[in-house]
Length: 106
Figure 1 (cartoon, rainbow, N blue to C red):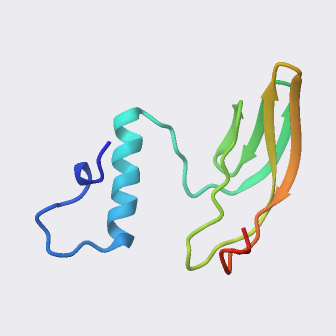
Figure 2: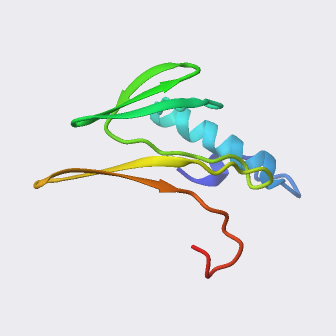
């Protein structure tokens, strides 16, 4: 999906703070992606081949989880579970997002 599908290409100027959320919303709508925001996650549990995610908006079951930590202006940093699968089995590990203050800090 092209970025121009979601914004007014005839405008002289488009703020990123307006254009990016519009693009995400159009993308999610076009491809039928169930994205929930904002959501406060209370618990993530490994349940074999699925994760159980308990939130303030209900409980979910998923094969994977993407954690977005907030906006660029006010990020929050949390420890999250990352789960990978392979023919040999599943692996779950906890990681903590950290601020990216320079290219070396990735």
